[in-house]
Length: 450
View: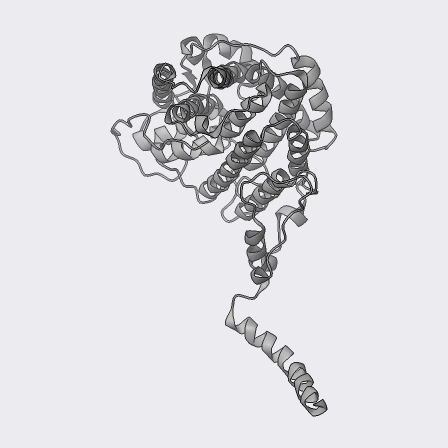
């Protein structure tokens, strides 16, 4: 699912230009801010899958069997109600498909938490290794094994999903996952170096870090669709996908802003608007709200311009587009129906939209040049000793997967022999000094025998 690179909004000139590379200061007087009512503005219909409770409970038991979260993290993770989000986003899925989508959602947010708050938050090398593991899990779901528990959940889900997913769905899911993990690694670099991108640059990156392209690929799977490639190559379909992506991603940044700013996270559209346009919190929230409304208007207008591919395909396209809209409205409601972004006050905030600004948690701000390690992430897979990093990079690069659909009996690729050759002249001299004498002696002995 390629995306259009056209600008979907105009950035107004900044009243007070800023080039800060850190979280913008928040005034002590700014205790609360008001969210725009995007749910009321959005014209899409909310539906909840009737299999929600049973499928969610079964999926939770499956995810818990991996013992990824314990104690307070376990409680926080389950209070987020990811099963409810899945049921709102895939309301027409069968029980089996919904159950698998619930599994996917647990993997997605577990990985998201690792890169946003956990051991991969600013660990560039660890993030690259984790990304490689994820892609191997998708390419070789029947043969690839990993001790990295989050990676194993993805492999388990995908092995089952491939039983009914069309070849096109599988290919698109793998391709969009590659875009997602690549963008996550870029975002980790931005955090590590405290870089705040421009609004336009961030919007492009956010379309991939949001993982929305992945969940749109699962819309096909959830509805048992088998759409031809020409549908996804159509500029109008691409524009609708991009529009739905922007709407729910920008809304997610707006709803998650309070929690993220309290952790010193600058990779958020509200923070970036504050930085680039010199706005206070309320001004930046209003700005993002206006962006979302304009994007909804454009989506609704473009929806009426879809071409026709014939009666049978058009019927599938209509279901797919409705699936995009279910995701948008589902995320909008779920953001207030769980405790992930607004804690125990989520029901009140959904009614009055008034949010109390959280103080910055200084414990979430790592010292310069620090390496953050998450206890539950195996060090042998995600973290290497300094001396091993350089030598391991060529092999990892050679083994890095390319997006493709792989036959079930194929096995994970190994690094090519050329990737294992030393890169420096000194290394070659060392090897030559060791190998040359015995080789010469054998050669001379051979000629004596002749």
